[in-house]
Image (cartoon, rainbow, N blue to C red):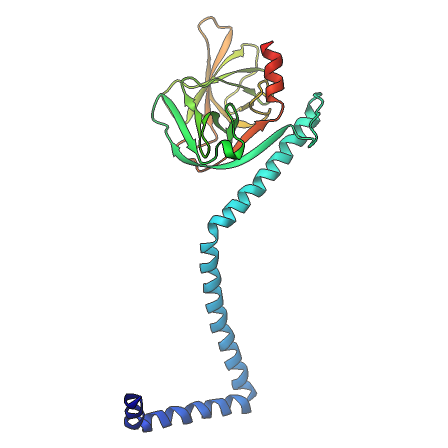
Amino acid sequence: MQQIINFIIRNKNFLLFLSLFFISIVFTIQSHSYHKSKFINSANFLSGGVYNSLNNFSEYLNLKSQNKLLAEENNRLREQLFNINTTKDSTFTNTTSSGKLYKFYSANVIKNSYSLIDNILLINKGQRDSLKQDFGVITTKGIVGIVDKTSNQFATVISILNSTSKISAGLKKTNHYGSLEWDGENPQIVQLVDIAINANVKKGDTIITSGQSSIFPKGILIGTVEDFKHDIAENFYEINVKLFNDMTNLEHVYVIENIHKEEINNLINE
């Protein structure tokens, strides 16, 4: 306390000057409308800048929760879209109480291999999130793979860049479908085989899922025709497909559950 008193005594002239200067500024602002408006504008500018910086910092801290909300919203919209399109294009009678054919779950990729022959992914959702084997996995750009094994919190996904992967796919413009495979070479190119020779294949044609399995709905994007040739017997095309997805850079994915999958498989296996 004595130090504070000594400081005031030593700097009494300077402190008196500051006090009088401050009082004069206040009186000037109050008595002149021009100065008052300038002061208010300056104060608003400074306070606005401070609040804007604080808001940006707060938004940065909330990015994780905001991303989660956006992923959940995309999930709902994608689920509605596929269920509407499937119901409209199919004669299958849906008997579920919810009126849905497919459910979608959002997840994040926490490990991804793409330089091996048999590549897999690891995602941060598992049995506690209702994920099971043979659920399809996609992104907003296209197909990724199929769920293989699940634990309580995680699941492995057989990538389309896997020698064991075989997915029903075909030309978007026709009903010609074959099997999507990978030759283990280029992670941007997969192969579509067993497309009938009478199919009118052209470079740049869009390739989609066929819907002729219990895993993926019809119409999920895969890629475009890069080039093609006839097989040895010249009865089918062998098509190189350039993927829409960058399989070397995956982060957010969606897992698809076909609600009628078990019923369909039981019928097929009888």
